[in-house]
Amino acid sequence: MEHQFTVEGMTCGHCEKAVTQALRGVDPQAEVRIDRQAQQVQVRSSAAREALAAAIREEGYRVA
Amino acid sequence: MEHQFTVEGMTCGHCEKAVTQALRGVDPQAEVRIDRQAQQVQVRSSAAREALAAAIREEGYRVA
Image (cartoon, rainbow over all chains, first blue to last red; front, side):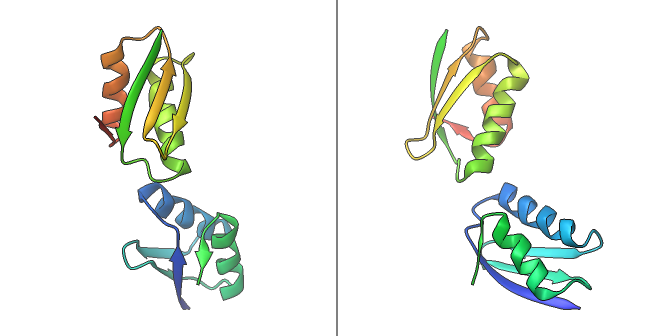
């Protein structure tokens, strides 16, 4: 399943890594693509959308 | 010895951690204080100033 999130607050490559790792914490098989400039995070995962969004928020970023 | 650097490009807390770890790679005993807003990095270390500056640069930040 493909999920798309608008994520605010990712300022650098470390932030991308942190978000990716947070998502992989929910689903180790998750495929994550991030366009930081556009604030877009695309996740291919069987996990529930809310679980993925919660992981991003817990990492300190705002899911719009 | 106290060293003060003006470092550009630190955008978030992950960047502060990356700079701190880079400096500790040169001197594990280094005491590091970072004011990200002011772009200031203060290092108490016996290491050579140029070695510390090089470590920051290798991490991808600009030492002014």
